[in-house]
Image 1: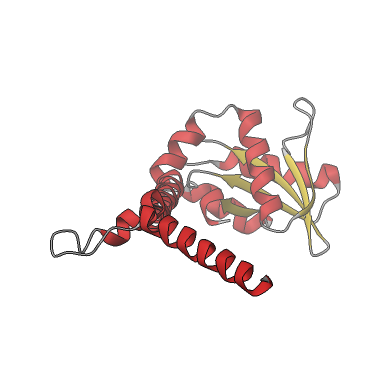
Image 2: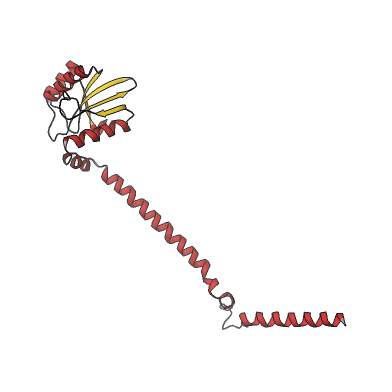
Length: 192
């Protein structure tokens, strides 16, 4: 008796499972042979290709953003853009900009002096134990003797080691000659 009940339950379960399976599958014929898999899995059949397309779109977007970022960095660092940026800066902004450049080049104790009474020195900085007194000039024309004289006397006033004139422009021949004789270093900000 017990055996018959078990056989009936198994037969019922097998029949039920077969009926459920048939609900979700379709007979294979030449007409629907390729669509059988689609019909059996329904919407899940389309998830894998959609996930791959989604990943591809994300990678393309990231690549485009990276490309744009690199182009913007290159565009911002072109000399003509720097010149335009320099010419739009005030004297104080240029001094701050020069201080930031010096910090990025490994100078320590970099400080911008106060505006008035600075004795011609705009930035004080130290590198490898050498103290630099720096006169900054944001010019569109060549820098002349006056800046060299201010750097020389300002360095003596602050009792620093090396006087420097730092500019975004070039220097006149007489400024180069005076700097050579007085020991003032002439730096261009684009070559610092």
